[in-house]
Image (cartoon, rainbow, N blue to C red):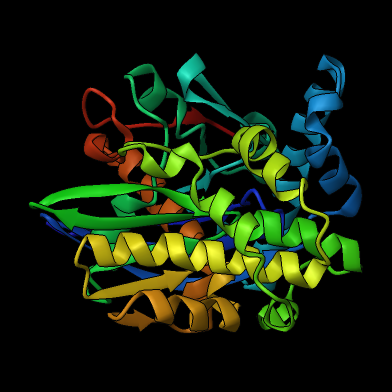
Length: 357
């Protein structure tokens, strides 16, 4: 017998370009699960909050606790505003599924940390909250990432044969021998945005500045030779890897911002193209902020001969918040919401922590 779950999904990625809020209705009918996006909006993260997130490693324990609380308050303010703006009936909302803000991701040490107090969010909205979707998978021996593939292969399988999200990092999902494979491919917008700061930009619209630059062959070679790319999945990336492995190479070369951006885009296009070609994939659905980078897509077409599907803007920007709402819906259904072949865990898990209002 079919029934519906209505959830708000919250997603804030490592590139800190805003809090994505989606209100989604999911229909559960035996094994068939479909969704309808009913409202979506992005809220900018206040500059002061954003600064403290980027300086996380310099904060003391009480400052971290304060940031955790204030992020929960910010999320709650956005949800309450979203409900009013879109004239939603709060009593119909089953739960808020909140990804939180990743500040530490160290599965090899047995932990990951996404800030944004779930209890605060539940109390200030009056709505049940599910958060902390990654910890249980790590306890079961997994990477705690990526989690989006669960939604890719169920909700979006009609779009393409594979799914690429270009956010702070690039991650891909596809099936191989009827098994779901997914992993972080390479950096995405994070290093590009870091370089853009040098020329007073938050990001590089359409990749226009990268397009003006000249590719630096030696830098490109050293980035492509990073050991991570030779590792077999399951594997995932975090800002710790950028700081310890990627940035030391990038900043060893004294390049103009344009040349640096051009080289970074080429590096991403090569890494993504190699994966798509090596796995003999015929098509890829691209979402996330990087899907708006027309120069990156142009360069990817040089290295991947298959079909590149760029969906409507709403799906580009909100696919991940839709999927986290879906993971929350699966939690409420007491169904597994991870794929162990993707994360490397011992088995599929029903992940999440419940906070009652």
